[in-house]
Image (cartoon, rainbow, N blue to C red):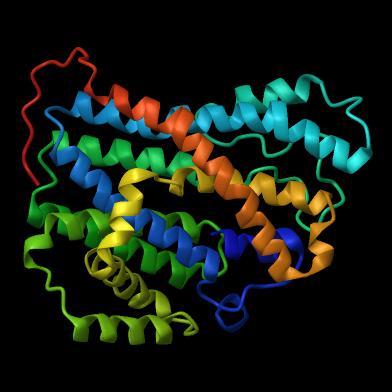
Length: 328
């Protein structure tokens, strides 16, 4: 996602995939991959929770504390730094806009900017454009929990639901191919496919030949105007395949320090700050490397001081009524 956003935020034009595709660019592929992985991981979380209340508690701890701290850090730290970089003074920043930014975005992004920041940059008005997915991610969590409570996450039923969502996504691309909301439908599709893969994992083969076919299908589908017919399936299989075929040391790193969520939260505003500092004048590669270099320490701090302490609260006993669930 950092690579995809670096082109837009820095004003370097379309990313290499978007230049040859009318269906999906690098950003869309990253969002789809993120939601597909989320569908698999959240399904695993649901099946290992003793109740839907426990599942909801785990989801809240994983998403909301880090998100709320990000809102505060953006408003109280990054915003003033952006103001100084843009206007050489902090005067006028501490207005009602600052507090309204935090209050309006507690449950998802409703206010994108803090006036008058970012009005003369290549991608103006967006302090943290990545956060648009938070709202839809939370909706996916709620939907999965509700379906689980209704016994709809059995193998055959979850596959039927995913097929219906997939069909809706295809219809959206056919009837309104240029509609920006198609990316939201694709995100729901990716989550549903991830949940289906988890439910059917015992029946899905990890085969090098199938992975090669999926890779070729993905390569052909992205530039194809009707690639939406098969690209999501190919990408979902590659995500599943990679999860089991990546070297073991990659899973070990993730078990020690998970920088993924912190990177997602802070990459966009930190990149905008670098734009205001003039780093983009050094060229795209330097801008990208500077963004990565700044984001990783912040993501590490987010994990160490916010996310990991919150995740330790998963074991806290909470009130939980009798809640029999159908297994996945």
